[in-house]
Amino acid sequence: MITFDNVTKRYADGTVAVDGLNLDVPAGKTVVLVGPSGCGKTTSLRMINRLVDPTQGRVLLDGQDVQAANPSVLRRGIGYVIQHTGLFPHRTIEDNIATVPLLSGWGKAKARTRARELMDLVGLERAMARRYPHQLSGGQQQRVGVARALAADPPVLLMDEPFSAVDPIVRASLQDELLRLQGDLRKTVVFVTHDIEEAIKVGDLVAIFRPGGQLVQLDTPERLLGFPADRYVEDFVGFDRGIRRLSFFAAAGLDLDVRAVLTRETTVAEATQVAKGIGEQWVLVIDAERKPCGWVALADLESAPETATLADLSLVGWGHTFRPDTDSLRAALDATVLSRTGRAAGVDADGRVVGVTTYERMRAAIQSAEEAAVERQSGWQG
Amino acid sequence: MVWSWIPQNIGQILQLTLENAYLGVASALIGLGISVPLGIACVRWKLLYPPSLSITSAIYAIPSLALFVVLIPYTGLSDATVIIPLTLFSLCVLVPNVVDGLRSVPEPVRQAATAMGFGPLRRLARVELPVAIPVIIAGLRVATVSSISLASLGQLIGVSSLGYFFIDGLQRDFATEIFVGIAMVIVLALVADVALIVVRRLLTPWQRRHLPPAPPSVLTPASASREMAEVS
Image (tube, each protein chain N blue to C red):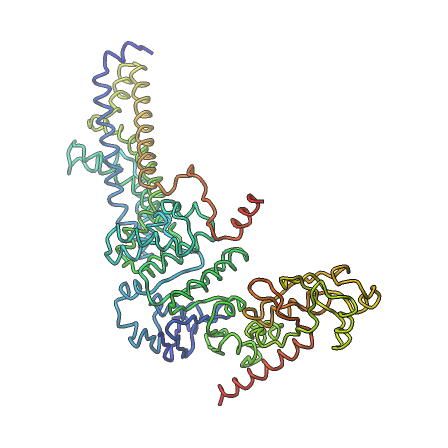
């Protein structure tokens, strides 16, 4: 657990980088500090490992003031990852990773064994162990940076815009990798970024700073999108926050329709009767294994010979599906929007149809999720 | 050219070449020994650098013969009378190179080293100086070649070096001897330069450019799509 206790950083020229910061970083959680440049987020991060010392206030690590610790010893217990990696160009990948174990006197053999384990952990081929940083791509270098930070298994990890210098595709894969690692390792992570999307993706909690070094709001990503504290936060989180917030609501809350899901062997007469009976304009056709085959419109059913089966008709592609058990309402809405029929099929892990959602059903699910969130929020504030 | 003069005097040629090499190389190495701590100090205390630069440049402007003469009352006609001025001259090249070399260490590298828990001295010894080696050796090459060339002037005050051939050749009006002297200075400078290139390569294996490019890491989408492309 890291605690900022009324921390201020004022430079000699009078600039205030951080202004009266109070912030708790719970153990095992990822807290993202986000804001425009000059908002004090990086300065705050660097006060944890004493690359910067506060002018006023205290930074506590597990209750101990970091000012009381020997800086070098303190830093060996805190992993650090930065934007331009800061890998040592004159050391091989394995020796870069083994830096802190070697500094802590582990002995070369043990430190190198550890380096190899970490290469596996962050998804680097062991063949790269003897290479030098400049021989690796930007994304690979950043993985080495993460491995180096984790080498001595520190409980705390500081990440200063770690993925800002790589292209968007590599960045996304590094973010996914971090989430996977954090799921296993449960480090106390402080992550600095200027990218609110990244903050919302990787953070358990997001702290939004404004220029002048003030913390404006500390909240979960979902609450940040749903209940921005003020106009500044609202502008900062972006214009489509309502849609993005649906990522945090489970699609399991959707009430799926199973009545208009019919097998290929169903006759046109039966299908027409079902569709009319429930007032549905589209029927989802599935095969014997319940895999989707496509949609058929009520109008087409009415013009088809009654004795034909659904297999005989030409179908509209079923488009994107979603997983009610694992996906969010955002994914379900996306599948619905992308579908030509305004409907999307929910499937299980094996791709078998479990039901169909419509705009109407989406609306109901979003509304009840919103209501639950508002209830939680008022409970939170009360 | 009187070619037969060369084999007849090969012993003397080699002897003077070695003496010349000793004077030049010793000066450059002592100069390096002074420049590294001085350069470190100039990076650490920035105010020290401009005066250091002015003083070393001023020294460099003093004619070498004048410096020899100034030193004779103190060090006599010994090797030191040549080595001390050449060492001082080498500082003019070496100090800026040590400073530039240390400043060439990228800021993220320096910062990462600090954040990993290197203290200032360990960071200097294990990160900053090793990374600065290419720039420092580049300066050492210039200083060595220049010292080897200047060392021949020691002959003017009787310290034996390849300069002997220039003076003797001039007095005897014997061009072959002068050409041999010039040729040996050039050969010596080239050998020293190549030796330093070899030293740099040994010390900086991480700088070699002919190593194979990195294979993509297993987990990047780019490599995944490439693998898929290969499968299909």
